Image 1 (cartoon, rainbow, N blue to C red):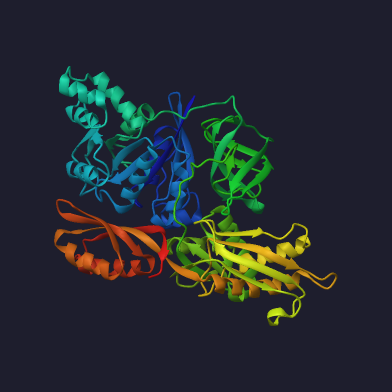
Image 2 (image 1 turned 45 degrees about the vertical axis):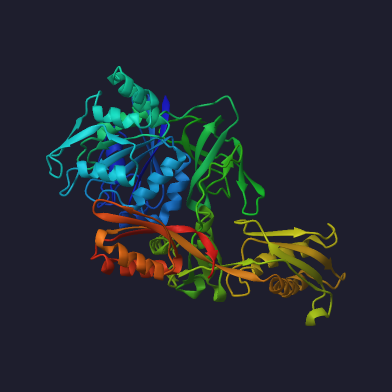
Length: 618
């Protein structure tokens, strides 16, 4: 049996989960349709997801069409959870990009399509909610070509759009509009149209399959997830146009962990997509992980639970399984070899401080937050003053979701400080400092520590190296210095965390049996501070890439306002009734722009932004 791993992607509320339910129901995988409003859908099985009616974590479900098993990965739609979506993309064979026929092309839809096109992932566009009042077809196709990609053509038409009587009809196989659209991306179709003879329906079917498979063309289908119209045609398109997962079972196992879920007793369930080989129960696996400093670490364990999605038996190439027994497994871990397939995205820029509502639960709160951060490498939890925990997040909605998770999954009620933009420091140059035991620099530590601080590679975090002779210090003293360096760098010269640094131990000494690890933990921050002052630091602030669509007469006031907030523009694209403005903006000004945009555009402006890295503070 062939396997297709398909992701359903969309802007929030476009109907992803409803479409997943319809596909599972129509093909016998579930015996009743769940409802997002009713909170009883198959893939949104978390209590918080059901309460809020949104998808927070990627979920996998399967159904069968003929000799093909389709694994559906239902992904979040809210921009706060974009990292969850991007991690799922690398394990997909193809995607269905969902649009609402009423709301049309939205900001998140554009972001997703750009990513799908960059990855050359086979993608079908499904226009949902054709039976809703206000639904459009012809005008929406124009918007898709203008705002998503010009390389599209409809495979179906709609009659009675915008009413309960909306129905879908299949376009003829020799559709001239399809031929003209394919000619833009397929040289053979272009030659046939120009020089003749005209391409036959069979020629167009082959060209459509080939260009969809290589990600250069995107068929458009219409339908309704709730009513079921057009869903059968969508399934036919998915199975017929997206190539199944290749299998190479004669090699060693190779795969990617794209999701991790907590279980009872702290056990984790890892969702593994296998590319090559086979995994069986009781098999011992070694996963590879690339750390921020470039080191490769290993995570080993024996498979004590293996649940292959949609089938029994071992996990074979092309399939996905939920695996237990891999303690310490994290999202992004690789089986077999490390590759560069993983998506690259900016880290969170919103910082908050979390405190337990009941002081006696402070330790429990920190343990719970560290557990959540360990499941998601892009959530960073660290110590804060007075027993609190500092947390890095993507947005306010994510903060609300984590608060609910803490209460429901861990029994901890927590208070979050208002989120604030997180600044970073980076070393400007090279600085050195040294303290000799026991009275140098006014200290009373029985230790000698010399440190050099210099800039490290971009996005490396913090690196610690040695120039001193190995064995010159007991291991515990070495560890005390290294741990203290990284802890001390959480607050630099201006109080912001220091990143992308390299600290080298250039001198060391101790006096036996007087010296202790506490001497090195006490002296290291003093020496490090002096070395950091000698190197100097530069403060960096996070930026957001933004897109905003505004009415034609609002271009001047909106661009003027954005410029006053420090925006740098990358483009202004005219449309039939609006301007699309793109650029980058300091993250600390994003909320102000969002508040002022409605007044500048009479409530018609649409705004989207996401983290895009950082720049030196002006």
